[in-house]
Length: 278
Length: 154
Image 1 (cartoon, rainbow over the protein chains, first blue to last red):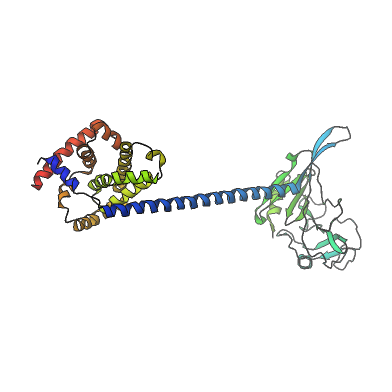
Image 2 (image 1 turned 90 degrees about the vertical axis):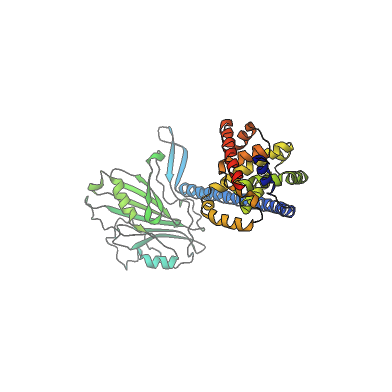
């Protein structure tokens, strides 16, 4: 017997028994079915996860879009006195705040213009003065606070009711940073806080509008501490209006910049915004 | 198609088993390769519609690749010694294959396909994705080694 014949004989001795062969066949079929099932489960999970991700992205995109749309509105075909047409942009808010609609607030007795806390005493009935804590407790809401505000008194400027339910509230903080009057060395802030409820019927209660000729004139600030955006418009070189829509309450800060900040107004505005916390 | 699979399985499962065992010399790995190869064939209508000979070539190609993957895996390298011991003790009856184990891995498949299955050098080159000259060289060196081992055995 030559070597190749011996080699073949060796190989012939390697045999798969029939019983083992049948057992392996069964295993092959079972494994195939298992694999198919597992594949289907994985495909289903991938599809479910993809749908979830897409929905999440859409929802997130909608939230962002809604929050921006709530603040910036395009007003088409406005015309100026010369008869020319322009696209105007308004900064406003349609937010509806949920609060204690039956809150027992001390209504203001007068509506004099307020530029400062000067001449306003705690027992002055003309102005309805509150602390943060009192207002938050009474209305069942939370307000933004700011580390740079030294005077935290809040003036209830206006409260409107419909069927005895609170429909609209406007609060003022005339000079919380205690800037010196008529001084160019300190930055002054005048804060207005407004919220509308579901009972609001007055369409003129459009809160604040700041009409701009271009969307480009709206500056966008990020307030990391409250994970919120703020929108700024400049009235003139010295005054910036900044709007914050947070938790369905709109805040307007009229910031009169000190002389040192005129070269870089954004930095001073951002400093004030970064001091907000919730 | 299940009928066709049964037919192919009955025809070629032993051949595939023999080829892989003569390459790996391990029953568990051989059965794994056999299962993996036939799972790929099961309900693969495109392959099952080919001629028997073409399906056999496809199965040989797939199982050779699967077997090579097993040898390449780092885990396999670690447990080789343990496996060898286990295999020897469980296969004392088959002392005939002992000389084959000394043939280098590279030569085992070309030798089997050429001398046992009767494939030409060209066909083997396609099956194992090597050039014809490389296959020719492996067969000739393998034959020399085979001669030494068979004579040693005597």
